[in-house]
Length: 104
Image 1 (tube, rainbow, N blue to C red):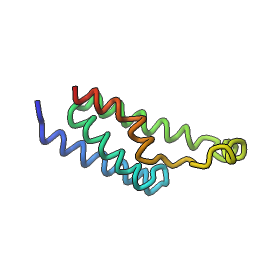
Image 2: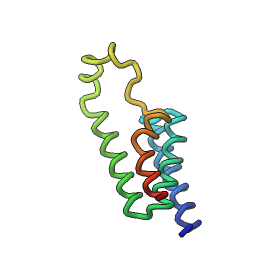
Image 3: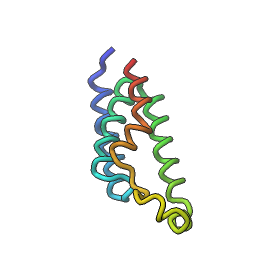
């Protein structure tokens, strides 16, 4: 059932959380857009359980990415030029399947 209130809340939450992550340089601008898409769909159609699972995954993966970031950069900096910021493609790869499952 389509719940516009839940979809709106998902949009607001994903915009705010994605904005904070963009401000902290965990997301690129396109990554923020990806977070809005996946967050809105996941929370809007999956509800609190799916939404909180996505938030927990995002926060924990962001913290783990930053853990010993300088050491990782020194070891792999030349091999992986993308850095720690997630872009739209990464947001879709990490959250897109969950969003599609929430739609089903």
